[in-house]
Length: 409
Image 1 (cartoon, one colour):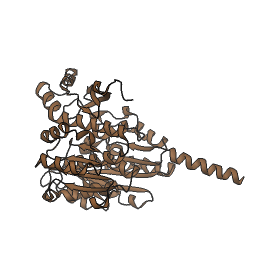
Image 2: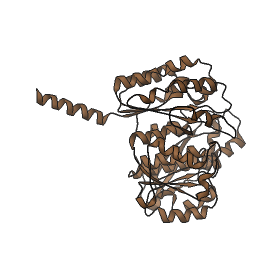
Image 3: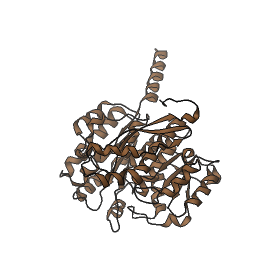
Image 4: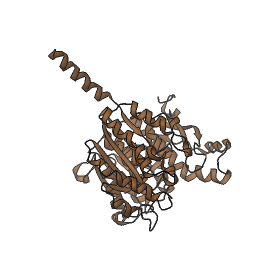
């Protein structure tokens, strides 16, 4: 009997080791849904998310309660309101929103895994600001529960936005951001304690209050590291990853810095030069000198917090995974290209909601190469019917110059 008991304990432990990380995204826009395609997590059926209509909540709750895992990373706004856009204007009493969050604690009781949650402090134009804040304040006891982490991120804080001050009134961690929060908490769940050295293009950048954040950049960086449970270290201490913060001042100097850093450390590059777009001068250097394919990660698709969080999360999650790293770099390049080329072209040629003909923008794709692989754009679609975001299917194909062809599976 004793032997059978030990065997049972062993099999139970093995089951825990094989249990998935569950990820319940904020919505199905590319930055939020992308981790569901990375092979690292289990996600709800994508049809439970309905683009701008918001999530279909009954199947979302059913999936959550029926799916065990060793950890859960989840958006409060997806379960309470159906997504970020719905959270701003959906007329729903605070008590009902809180009731919709009950399945998160039920999952914790039923399956026993760790829970990592994030809610959004709404931006200035949300008609349901006070309701959302009341819900976030009512969750104050949750971080005191064993195995529950809760934080808030504030969304698009323009000058004089009340969100940064409102977030400070919450009795748990808060920081700028929103669409990168799921990725950052996945890094916390999958690789806590990552040792990260932060290098700024110039030291003055750390004190700059960046667009949509409302706080000095150093505070945003510190908040992202705290969310990831990453450990800030110096270059002399031998970091696992360097997070390089580019502010758009001098791309040539950045290249010189990267040439010094990259032989010694994996480097995640966050391009904060412009909101929702990268710096074409820097990208030309990176591609021309063959540095882009050697990066640990790159992000330029969103606000400063978006880019910092994505670069950190993807750089940390795919350390040591060569193919995964290249695939994330291909996706990040598409996001850069979309901001610089694709989005402006589509907006100049088509009204919204976008017709199928807008997919013709794919003809402009430049087919970049990453370490001997040609990045092919197999398809492009607009699930939200607008030009702001695009969903791409990318493949890495061995370049003919590499001597043979074939898809990377």
